[in-house]
Amino acid sequence: MSAENVDRATGLLAEEPSQVTDAVVETASLEAAVLDSAAENISGGQPAVDPAADTAEVAAVDVAAAEPDDADSVDADSDPADADTEAAPEGTQAPAAAPPTGTMSAERVALKALEQRLLGGERKLRRREVAAGAGLSLLSARKLWRALGFPNIGDEDVAFTENDQSALNTIVDLVRAGKLTEEAAISVTRAIGQMTDRMVVWQIEALVEDLVHQQDLTDAVARKRLVSELPSLVDALEDMLAYSWRRQLNAGVQRLAVRAEAGLASSEEGREGDEDDAPLPLARAVGFADLVSYTSLSRRMNEKTLAQLVQRFENKCAEIISVGGGRLVKTVGDEVLYIAETPAAGAEISLALCQAFTEDEILPEARVAMVWGRILSRLGDIYGPTVNLAARLTALADPGTVLVDSMTAAALENDERFVLLPRPAEDVRGFGEIHPVQLLRGSGRGLVLD
Image (cartoon, rainbow, N blue to C red; front, side):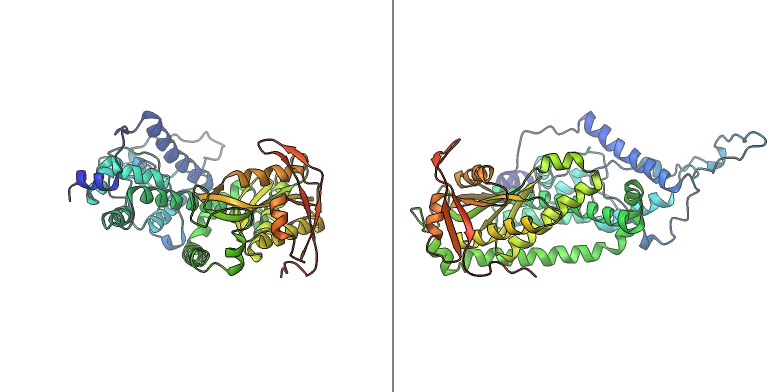
């Protein structure tokens, strides 16, 4: 199949500039310069060690689109002995010798060693070679790389490995086999790129923070130290990623195919149609939890204390939502958005969150709201008036309380686990007059956390 035919099949053609811009070249060159500078700062100007020593235990930062570092190659016609030297003034101590021209510091060797381990080999391929190997035009290949979050690189940059070639073939083969449309291929690829990017940043920050606390290091030193710690963690982190993805995919399949009777019955509460109608096909409990006075608190906290507060908030939310059978959609600063399959499940999670923050010795109280209604789920997020109404109700809730709307209250009114107290009507922007109802604990223990 020709590249032109594959492009038509995948729909990945676009009017894009074929040449990398000067700004991109300058940025990529700057990344390489920063790596060299960082390596020299780590070593303190000490001579380089033998690059062959202990390479299995050294690490490298993956700069996916940085240009090849010409400074790391030795010019065959150059002689390090010809470099100009200047004797130190008599009576003074000569500064430590810098690594000879054409050699790498121990830290630079470490960076390159882990890069090869993470990328599956040495960078040997240019972008046109990889695209041609998959039977794609360069524009089509770049569309997929951009979906993964890779920046542009130049035609002459040797930036890819055989693993890059294999990955590109994998996604293109799915389209050729008719298992994915071109639109689905781009969307799935973008999901992988965005989620793994956020995951990697999260993990690195967690590891850096651990080094700061456990070894009493500054943040800058901990980031450099992490380079040597990563090799022993890579395989375990990769295994956990694959394990978690399979478990999460299975949970998603169960939600699709084995919906509980309560969920199916509840999906008809307060609305018309079935689970397949458009444009908002899913019935879900949508909840928000918002920390009270977070902005003023954060202004009075140092960086360390604020980081601990944010992590405590996110950890507690994730635990409660997971135990309640819901899904944490996202956190935005001091606010968390979650969903659940039934009104009762959403109510249990909302009450548990409110109680947890009220009883917490460090975290402030929270305003919580939950609305049962119709949503659209796309790009890992949720959309629709139900989400907006839940956000508006959160702003109306008093600290330490949970609010629902009248439709959600109607879906819960016959459940002894909950008590519903109507509140005065409120005029809400975009919704007009609504009738908030405060949700309280009735009979039963609620969610039980370990």
